[in-house]
Picture 1 (cartoon, rainbow, N blue to C red):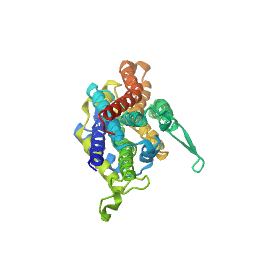
Picture 2: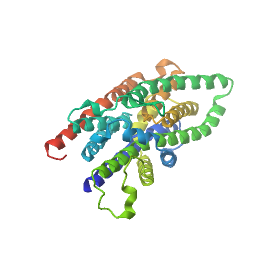
Picture 3: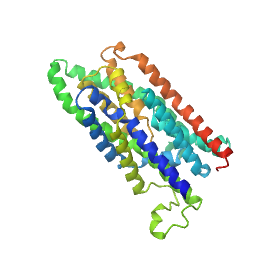
Picture 4: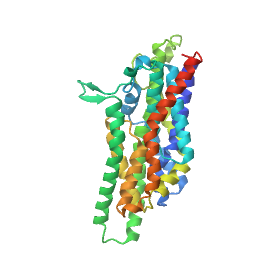
Amino acid sequence: MSMVFLVLIVALAFEYINGFHDTANAIATTVSTKVLTPREAVILASVFNLVGALSGTAVASTIGNGLVDVKFVTLSALGCALLSGIVWNLVTWWLGLPSSSSHALIGGLCGSVLAAAHGNWNVIRWSIYHPTTHAAQGLWPKVIVPMLVSPLVGLLAGFGIMAILLFLLRKRNPYSINRVFGKLQLLSASWMSFSHGTNDAQKTMGIMALTLFTATQTGAFADLPSWLGFLKCSEFHVPAWVKVTCALTMAAGTAGGGWRIIKTVGQKLVRMQPIHGFAAQTTAATVIQFATHWGIPLSTTHVISASIMGVGATKRLNAVKWGVVGHMVWAWVLTLPITAFLGYLFSWILHLCGWK
């Protein structure tokens, strides 16, 4: 029983770190365009992250039972998956690199479960077609393909939306444009924060629900009183209390801020005015909402960063600081393999210590 609560606590620690690590996704452009102060932007992001986190469980289901064979999931493997994600998030936060918390968690989960299965690669659900829902599940369609496609979509859509706005507003004076889009950016920032909550917070919900499911299968809750029956998950689902707890923890983490990454995303990529911030946030939020609808655990970091690049490229190609982009791309590429390795390593070390 103690192991169950330890894993749940580590999961909430990951969720909190995810909140302040990914705060930049929602508010960096709002702060950099001076539409809101950092404090005001964090409050706005916290509120709408909370609302978004309570709005569904499609992504949580993908994380919980769509990527690995749950028969090989152990509580120690889940703890190692979370620990690997936490380590990578803290390293990239310290370096000011906007990496993906989503991919950090997914990589850690795959690596730790692979170690728990003694290197049996069949535990990874690469691609599964469900004839009932006519939808593909697994690591390839739900993670790898979106990881490659979503930044490209964000880049092109950001460029397209910004180009359209510039054409439509070509005869307007800059002062009136800044004033109008300064107000509109409040809406786009709120929608971006809501979208971030609908996707990112659900990943930890999936891990916590998987923890409860695994504990139930091992009989860890057998001695609990009947009035605590909500913990006895005989099939995978996300209890309401898990949704609320993750939502509040994500909001608390968001309120904690993440100023190193905010500086990279909001100031180092490209110089922006409110119209640029509005276009980038609207693009990213739209892409994230489509992904959430289909249960895809998208990297909100990748999408908003790519959208900002696309918007900035409408000025001129060299308006985007491609050297900074290069460092970010390396962080994106390395996240899955490094966290998978860390998850495998931590799980292997626990096994050597006799903790199964």
